[in-house]
Length: 445
Image (cartoon, rainbow, N blue to C red; front, side):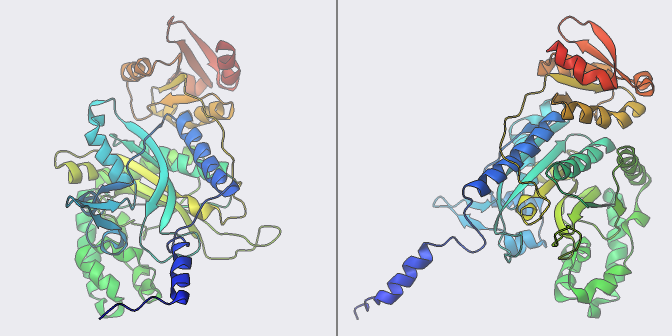
């Protein structure tokens, strides 16, 4: 039997549908695209001033990379990941997040043999098959920061500092930073047992999704947004009660660093960010959009715009060899454009660092962000390795980067409000007051 010809009206509908973007995607045109580029350049500039370098990973990765890294029992793997099978039989996925791909690159490109930590930033499109809503798309854009190869608590503080700073620099106000610790493997094992036992007692009162999560990934029950589960979650055991001594000490130091930087935070015991690779510090930054002329009346509930955490075990999950202690975060860029206070920056050129910042004591570490920020505001880009402690290791890194000057801040200088400026070519050095430092460096260029 011959196929019936397609009616003209149906052909028009098909043509009209073909001329529309897929659900959850959109075109970026003109000023809108420039504002995206401007944000990425602004964020990249701040990252560069703090010693980060750029990386770009493929949009397509092997599907197994994410199933192993992100973990079964997560919405990303079970429901949201776009996958395809190539003509050659390979199974690929459109990247749903950035951290696993950056860790894959860490091993593939031999970063483990380079000076640690490796500090990277990236940005671009990511893909998840989820219900499109305000500020949430199936093709969405993120800016990410990663510090890989250091277990030091100052790495955690650095990531939180930069993430909040980037948001502040593009006009965002009234930011709420929530932070928690889920501890190391020992801490998590004890907590999972207690959490599972608690939820099993209330199994009939929780949603079907939480019953599934309890079997596959218990921590994710704390991510549930179903009102039915809210009372149960409210009374759940808290992660901080199960931290090992090392985990407690690590978290205490992170909070000390945040306090020294004047960063306000709230400890949220239900914050877990339940992907398999997280450990120790986790955090989330949100804001409440305003909708009146004076920008004071909340229009919606708090909107999460950034988050991240430490992922000390991801390296071993992917490589099968050794752990790579790391800390990272990502900013959901699309959501920023819905906020009235977002300044929508335009693109501009950034500079390459010519100064390396060296610190030599805990007191110096507490003051280092203040000095780097003074230099950033004066447009003096800085490279650094705040997670290192020894002078020789930091000087060696400065020499490899071929910078012109090294800034040395020891305990004496931290107390006196000074910094030593060393010419890396002549080895001559001067002691300069911190408030005179930008002027001095600009004269030396």
